[in-house]
Length: 425
Image (cartoon, rainbow, N blue to C red; front, side, top):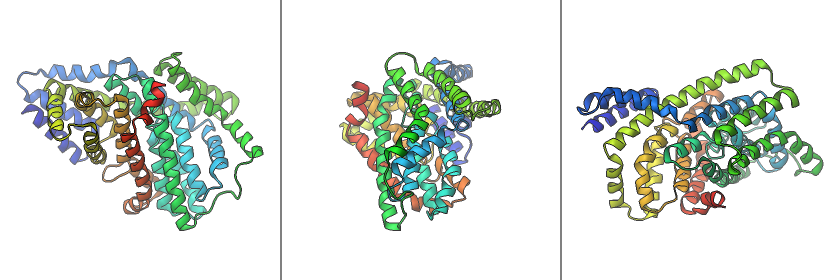
């Protein structure tokens, strides 16, 4: 009874568009005031206790890292490399847009930050070259969805924390799916560009004389990716230490090598990080308390029994799961969904013999796609608000890109080696 009313309060909060953490905290407090055998003091303990896990220290470091990248000149140098590599394809600047998002995703860890930055940087240039504004916006938004999948995505850290899975393995598991999404999006752009006559940005492929200076200019950023992933997998440092080292590395590169970052830039990045970290942590704390309620009420066991009556084999379960998560991702913030759903679904996942690492990437990719769709797609709203694109036009232009992402999701779901080969190598 109490947990049912708590879930109803949660849905009402989402329906009236309250912030996620307020909706969840309201549901948590509602449960403790309704349930006769639960003290409200436990609610405060569960909310505060969720922030005391050392693993979560990695989140502010990687958010800070992403904010610093805006002021170092790294983004511009990566764009030059992306244009050299893909500018000769049809729809050259759109192709470079997606490749840049993939390269940036290996450092910034925030799809919203990537989307906002690239909408300001690339969409006006694409429009000048004759691209449809809504298509340019959709390309930028779809490319930014690669960020939660490519390490060190915040979603990978949160899933590893909730599911008790190695974050280093989750980082490795995201590499191939992220590259797969990039390639399929570029194929979709190539098809659309061929139909509409979007021309290449360059009249020839990359030459060594162009490629080497571009690679050398972007080498500082590429080395950073190797430091983060390689250091964690080699056991040199933890994800939290990797975030701290990466921040120090970017500060040194931006200040003393590229000489573009100032103390004022670092101050702005710190302020942006504090706001972003506060938002993420409030969601984690509130959702962790709600997940505890569901565990206490043994909802996970009930869900497992319910699902297995319809899906007694992994294939059917994953099909149902994908449909459910795609719909859920349209309404609920991805990190909140991970914290609440993983404890509920993990017993069924283990019972059916599905690899927890593969399951994590399926969840993250599903919820990332939800950011692109109405009515609550956060990436869609940010992209449209920056570029002035109408939602209907955005949805229409994003259909080929949406199809590419769904194909990637299907491959990740039914070809386990895509997510498990690198972690188990």
